[in-house]
Image 1 (cartoon, helix red, strand yellow):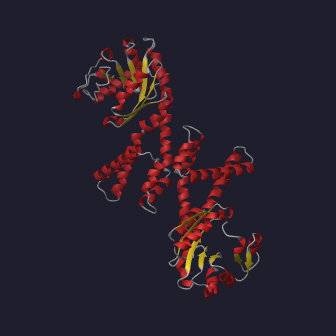
Image 2 (image 1 turned 60 degrees about the vertical axis):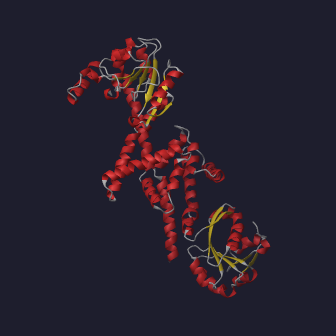
Image 3 (image 1 turned 90 degrees about the vertical axis):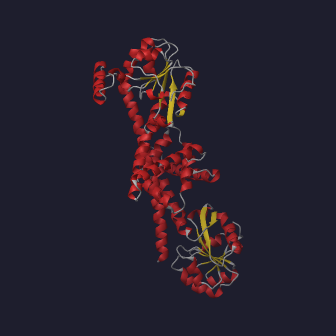
Length: 244
Length: 274
């Protein structure tokens, strides 16, 4: 997006994940410390259980000029700040999968030493991948339940829509494409009109028509409560996992 | 009715002769017999307004056309809160009722709440929604009060607060441009009490229960209309059972007052007697 590929250095233990970076024109290395030496803004994108070890490794090379952004699920700002030198500017980021198609939803929270400048920088850079908002750290687990996992709920819904169409006689491939486009279109209308979803829903429902009949089925199945349950379950799980 | 100065008679004929607008407020199976009885006295000036659920304009016009070539018929559906001037009334005009006849009725009924014209084929749906609606609300209020009592409120206070909450919410909705969904959101602070409660409602399928209720009431109205059309009940049988019932309930009442026709004695809207 906003940064030339040549200015990006990616580090990983093996080449397995580095090929994709090289193909985009980024530089790569197997040495984490090199990243700290060459870069100001550092993203930590390891699995949560690996992170403490990596932090120990890079700690000597972290200075007051660095901006460290952790993407590890469940690792709190408190933990990050504890494992890095005092005064380090730390931020915590939670993204979701559609970042890879520049339609992601990301939230970040700043640690005690990260200021407006760092927050603005991060927001500006990440906005090229989708929606990016600063939040209090307590919202991060909720974001997981809503949007991190939420992507899977949408896939499930899309699959079910398509199956309904197949049952009624449409070929599967076509049904899948139309289901996806329907979700995309509805989401786009929500985002672009800024209208309340209930209002947009009402506008699709002609009296006695097909839509209201279908919605009644959804209400009978308590879809709303089920979805609320899902978000709650994922959020609670995120909290539990973070405690471990 | 007599207390507020309304003239009272036990003669349907007298009522028809001295009125211009006739409200037929009897039970649907009785309508055909009332129409037979008053038919001969119906004149072109009369506006016959039927409030009987499920009785179609065409069935009334058919019955009256034996006596009068162009009977003015209006069908209306109202609800019980007219008693407190917060009724919900709709009306549909028949073949020979003019626009001004409809407007007259609208003015009259607007004095006891909301009133608007609709296509006749929507009246069953209106019955399901606002006709039966007060019953849904009473049920909800009873239950809300139970909830209050469970959590420690005295019953009277619980009922009072529950009713005021619904009244206030309805008023907000009517006076606001906003969608009820938005108004709901405005009450739900993040992680707060209300959203927790709403989750319970959703889990119970609250919304679908209400949709089901409106649908059931509407469908039943249509079924009853179908039965009424068939006129399976014999005249003698009807009058006898009704007479028996009236005799049991209020022995002092004159028997003919079982057939009630409300009356408005003048055509001018200024003489609203409610």
